[in-house]
Image (tube, rainbow, N blue to C red; front, side):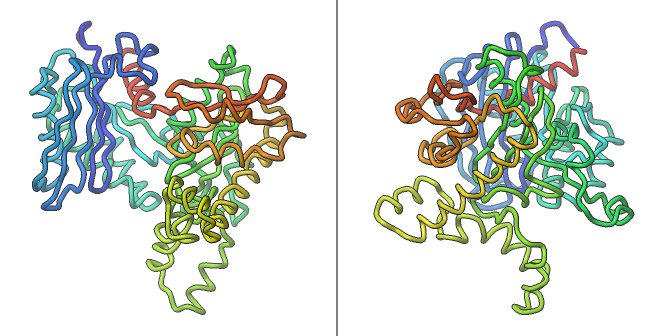
Length: 411
């Protein structure tokens, strides 16, 4: 790799979308939540539809956001369109300054515990994991194959959502079912949002002025998808999502924890088949199932107007969140910080206040004035007397992927 190659393109390929960022890793730590070092960001959505849309923002020269609409047939066409937009800003994929392309891959199973340079053997293994990540891994694979075709000479690196959680001990990762059956079908807790949990736990330690090895953190990644993790000394020891991203907290459209027998009951009593139950639990449950909205801002607006369904949905959401804070406090034994992150965690002050309310005996409290402040910087929102720091730490999964990618190709 050329000594001048310091840029990393990060690709997050969904089933009908591609999110991307181009970052200059010359001084990766200074990028943080600012645009410094972030050269371009963008999104292609509705791939395969007549109304496909590409939004591209060149940040390097303070350029203006550009939007184009029109049919984009597939991921190959989408990435070619992205390459064209980057080239228009002098940031093309053929640049000698491009060191690597980093890909978000949702499921890496137990095999992939670290970022990995992609070859055909790696792709084959990612494909083998499709049955446990049918909504995500196929799209990730498509993005990888397309990017490799565009730049076959360039290192392509897979960074796995599950990797951070592979440090969980067996007693946390195993389900209490027949071992032979579990092993034959790779049934265990894998966890997700790993790049976010890794980034936020490390940033929380820095906020406290300590090394990650010195700190025990409960990370609450609260977006439309939501997960919690218990991180002891920089290593994940438990997390709320399981075999799939369905388990755990109440989410925007996902149920989170539920009695497994509910699925059998729905088949027997409601006559629902597997696909219908899957759709119910993944797309028609959580906040949207409870009150018809999965936007926390809208739910809070309805609560302020006295809407009882919205209030109940919020209460259920907070109750589940408190249970995980309590459970992970027990798992860790000593908690140094609770960190809120992602869209809801970073922006919904009422969620943070309600989640911590009543936990004073556990050393947790929120200062109302600090909690109300809005900022893009990591910050403490707990009063000085609180034994456990409560923090808001904006996540940056793209930066985490870029850092891991760049470190690997420079090793």
